[in-house]
Amino acid sequence: MKKMICASAATLFALLSTALPAHADATVKRGNVGLVVKGEGLSVKQAGGWMDRHGVGIKARLYAVNKGSRADVTRWKGAATVSAGRRKFSSVDWNLRGQNFSDGTWLCIEFNKSDSRPCAKIHR
Image (tube, rainbow, N blue to C red; front, side, top):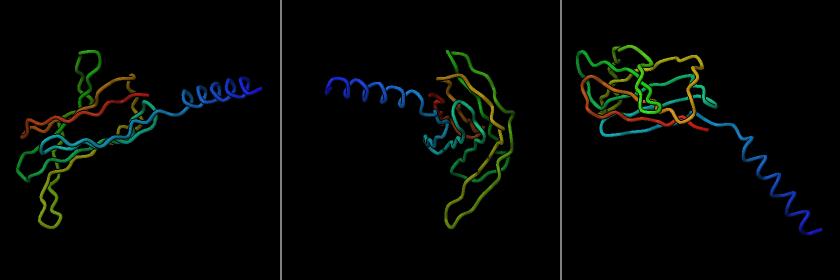
């Protein structure tokens, strides 16, 4: 009886752990650049980022890296300048409308005035 209960519990745990939804949500900061990704499963609804500084002509874009190949997800977009107290930064957001990515894809952001390029892994 005890073995049967343990086996049933192990099976139930295995089913629950594989049935849990994957999440594409992430917040990553690298150097002076940050990336925020919102979604569910392998689908990304929104993504955005910021760079710690103001400036004229600051632009950003998203790109994906999967199995060694890079593909642009968005075009260059001008960043909005934001002042919050003493902090000044440039911010940009995209509505990706549930764009699907393959399991293990890295979604990255790059700004034209920074060498930092943070990435978030989209996985189950």
